Length: 160
Image: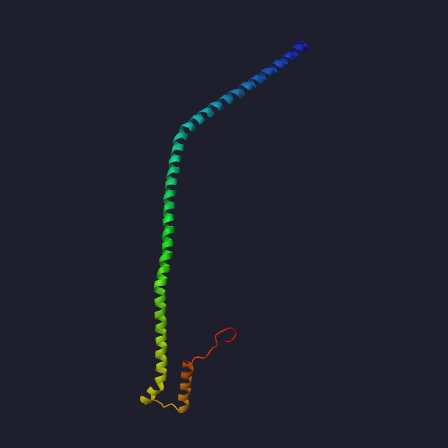
């Protein structure tokens, strides 16, 4: 039979054999993993060159279009500034005369209305309409006189 030392050596040898088998399996799998990784890196490097070229062209085209868009926005800014100036000039040229014409027209209408109001009683009499009494004519005259006479106002501080 085996002595205790020989038995201990046999147990240690079997343990080392199992450990070596386990390590061989792990190393084989690691070798496969490294091989697959190397293949993937090679494929990636083959595809990366054209991809970077396409990306570079895309960035260049985008920059070119941004420059064009910036030029368009600058032109639009200039056009809007010119439109502001043109509308200011048009407002100055047309608004003043239009306001004066409108004021003249309103004044003319008011004058015609006042003239027609003064002649209204005379027309009624001439046309055979109802005659107005003296008290009615006096009230009409007083109203027109009050409209024509401007109130005197004091100009200055605290007087009006």
